[in-house]
Image 1 (cartoon, rainbow over the protein chains, first blue to last red):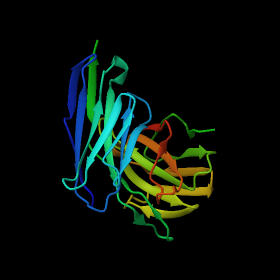
Image 2: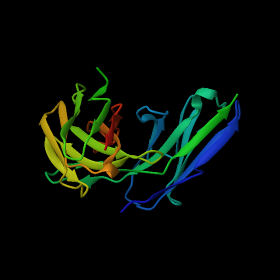
Image 3: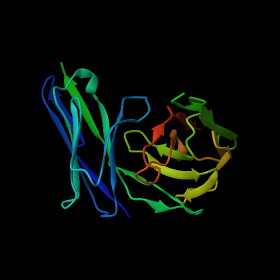
Image 4: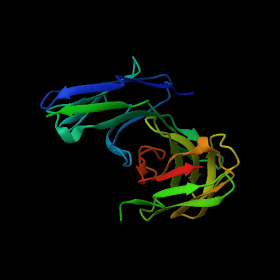
Length: 119
Length: 116
């Protein structure tokens, strides 16, 4: 089955600096890679995602890169702000067939990175 | 309505109690999920319902019993839980996309469960 490794487990940066979080996955069938942000006591929220047919995607200060050959993908946050402080989870999804046909994604999450942005 | 709503937000129960967690979405999503999240850990998949049928059961103990009464509702019935079952229980939903299966999950705020 899929295994997702995420590094680092904690990351502290100064406001305005960039932050990079890296993940590797094991299942070459995985084709969807989302990133979730979870603030303390709140729900995970999707911040950006990428599919395996794309190498890079950007949304304002957030970007994700994917290297299918090496099976790794990364989250890049530029010009960090204190409100970026949270736990970030990467995930990988390989479609699987359910009991009643059709297929749905099976998200496997990394262990999370606690990002602290110091003012 | 673009939210997944979970009730209750907090639940304390004894090991002999029976309780239910509820989840509701009105986005027309046809896949709904239960995840369990322990403190400082990632969410772990428990069950997936696809078109109101149980599609995936990740070897969850029978003291957890899911139910999907209709396309908008998802319940998780709890009975004879253990203290180690204390966790945040997250509901999520998703919808098929042009690119393929249901993957983009929308999470509810969760029910923080404590088993005494």
